[in-house]
Amino acid sequence: MTLSAKEKTMNVAFYGHVRQYHNLKAELDAAILEVLESGVYVQGPTLKRFEEELAAAMGAKYAVGVANGTDALWLTFMALGIGPGDEVITNANTFFATAEAIWIAGATAVLVDCDPLTRNIDPEAVRKAITPRTKAIAPVHLYGQCAPMRDLRKIADEHNLFVVEDNAQAIDAHGDDFKIGELSDVVCTSFIIQKNLGTYGDGGALWTNRQDVNDKVRKLRNHGSTKRDVHSFGFNSRLDDLHAGVLSVKLKHIAEWSDRRIEIANQYTAGLKDLKTIDLPYARPGYRHVFHLYVIETKNADDRSKMLDFLVKNGVDAKTHYSIPIHKQEGYPWGKESREVGSLANAEKNAASCISLPMFPELTDEEVNYVIDAVRAWEDQ
Ligand SMILES: Cc1ncc(COP(=O)(O)O)c(C=O)c1O
Image 1 (cartoon, helix red, strand yellow):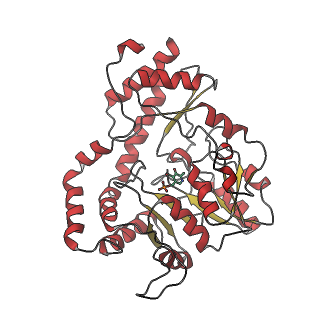
Image 2: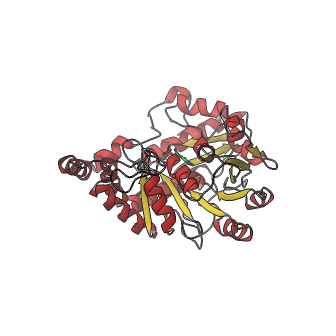
Image 3: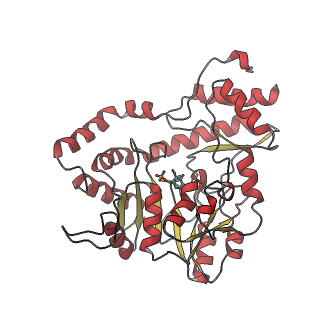
């Protein structure tokens, strides 16, 4: 079937939050009611249980729930002693929050280019950006695929740097021969609703084998306090027990949801691989790419807005992740000394040409086929 703008027969949403809620309604309602009936909503037993479940599922000694993924990152930087005068190297092509977290900690974000295939941080670009002030590398597992952690760990070891994984998009992913968390100091994640593991609102966590980071973040997230009325330096950034209850239910389903995401990605790839005007996402052999996003790129950047309009007109809710790289954001000067190192041509091409197709585990095969038809129709017109 070839679509034209006149033949729109379906609307395919970008997210499936309500569908997922309906599929798990009994379990989720029970978990929420249990917290409501418990009378303990902040730093209570549900949060403690979820932290233990998360640490066990991720193979870490400690997991700490915080208010959101951005806080997980900057609280981690602070706990590692990273602050003013220090540099953290990260992707130029990421969600704004990665750089924002470095700035909140008072440090300088040093932005480098990505690999043209995976769109993950380029280790050679990282190597060139190291200065005596560099304290950490903060790779993002962009779109659901692990960054090249072995190479990054090697560079970090050579220069005595911390590695902090921004895993907001890749929970349940792994590399060819490494797990997330195995080659870093701390892993940070976001539980905002649209993430692969998301709550009904905001949430975040970090996991680590470092007791010092665990202890420091536990204090920092709770006004510098682990004992009633006694406070050192701190903030308020806690994961509420209601969210912990929801996440506890959803954590049990994450592997099956990732499998379905991978299945949908394979369907998109099979249906679109012969097209001439777009590039499809590249999954590294042996890596478990969990497709938080299925991002295609128009070969010609000028086509991006035309294609996006065509898809939206045809009922496909496509989006961009992310159409403006960090160094071109209005908020970039916030990180006063922040700077780019080397060419950011790949990151800029990614920003100019990316289109994310609908991707969530509850998509039906009929909807996936409709999206494929719509993308094909764009090329055929
Ligand atoms: C790569 C990345 N880092 C950090 C964050 C920040 O997480 P949050 O929105 O929970 O603060 C997000 C998502 O929102 C993200 O995609």
